[in-house]
Length: 258
Length: 222
Image (cartoon, rainbow over all chains, first blue to last red; front, side, top):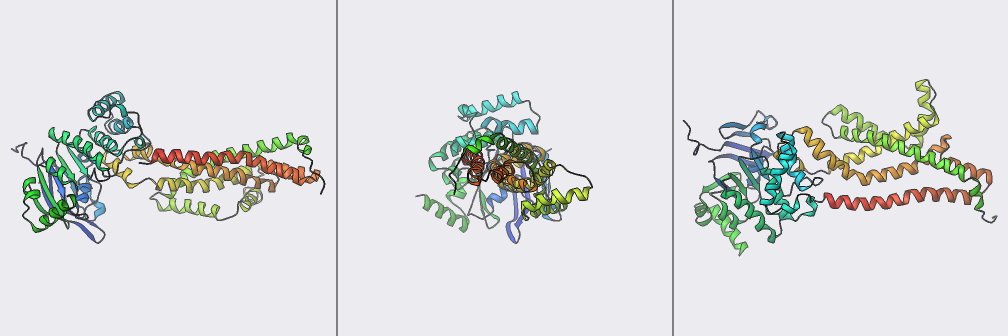
């Protein structure tokens, strides 16, 4: 019998992804247990964001497969266009992007309830009630009828997180969600993600913010050149990296931050 | 030159008003029909289906690449021969200007459809929205909003271009104006007045375009 606490939530094997001749992911193997919070760090172009986009089912792949909660999720086909993606499984994953992807013609509340009503057939009144609860929890209670253009960057990202949570995801993906924000707005978004972390929401986070990485990660992956170069607890990967490339990267990042 | 006498306009004000109403009626009908055609042609031009893309592309390029006057003449004089029936002036003008408007607005719709960023489609996938919901709830409303300022400009152009129907004997504002001008030998007064009437209607609309454009761009700036 499989022990539910230790059975992997995500299992990636031999994952390959190329954009034309450019090989971005060169055979990634990765397992993630329920409740883990993976932070993926590494240089630009190292494949971090691509890994998250593939996990979300936004990209075709060139090789390998992914299973989610024991179910086959993504499987490479004979050609990238023939990648098999299980849409039902995909619905248990939520994602927040670097650039605010709110729907600009809908107000905050409409952004939140669109998917629950259209995808799950939830009643509008029920969805609205859940949305309002979430908005209050994220300090956005006053903003339900505001349009995205009337919000600050930090507020937009909190709305985007709330929108993803409306579908009760089993895994949340955060792709550089604070990179486009003014520095003073970063904290409020990170606080919301830390709040989710305390509730044991499994998540994969791509970030350049090492303070945030250290505070939220249960495990850190250093990704470069399309490989996972180093994989371990935050104290080790960020504090005492074994690999030379990781060490170089960490040194440079912390140097810039000082 | 004889001294200017604008009283001639008062004698013919009813005729000028009738001409203006014909012009407005024709323009409005062609705007509604033309936008409807333009929307679907715009969709067809962005479609994955090669035949749809080819046929719609040929239609648009043909109507954009020939003078409106030729299009009008062809539909007035050649189409009835091909169909073997008479077409009224008004029907012919509606057909010609609608097809012209459809071609112009399809480009507007195509551009607005293309201006919707990849992130919006990514967000739809991440939220698990079915294709139909993606189209009707996310893509179309944004495309139409973005198209509004250019569509208004298209409408103003059509209003002005509609003066060409006078060349085939339709009694619009232009036709009536030039008739009065010929009969009274008062071209300066009459043609100036006709120009002003076109301007008084078109100018506020061009101002409105700028205003609405700013509003929409602010709203959709995310």
